[in-house]
Image 1: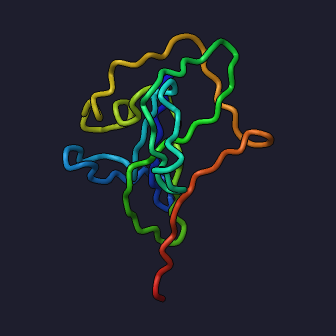
Image 2: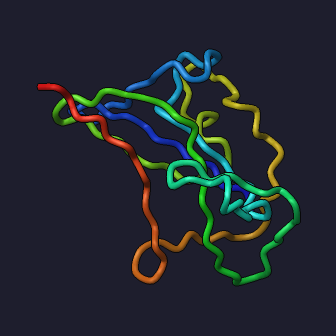
Image 3: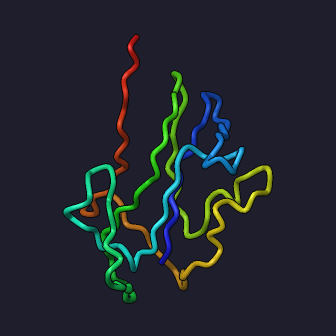
Length: 140
């Protein structure tokens, strides 16, 4: 299972705000991350609350019906939000920018996934789910 996450910015009228992304996409999103779930094992020594570091030492394949916690690093970024603007978290099984980019860019080139079958994402309740976002208050 491959997971792709993106954070998109919307203006106060609900329109997407496209941003330069990694110096190769003029119409990108605020931030991106991805994870091959079989490589989900964290390194508890090197990881921080804001940056999970993965071990990549062994392949932890999912079995049918298995539910596992994952932590996906979202690459650092910075964006200013005016009153009424919003951020939206998108989770997909394929590259997010490919479907969304008005310039037709192929996003980051993640075209070879291991996704097979139906995947479910469990959030809330007993499945602790959150997006950790550092907030820098304005000086006003």
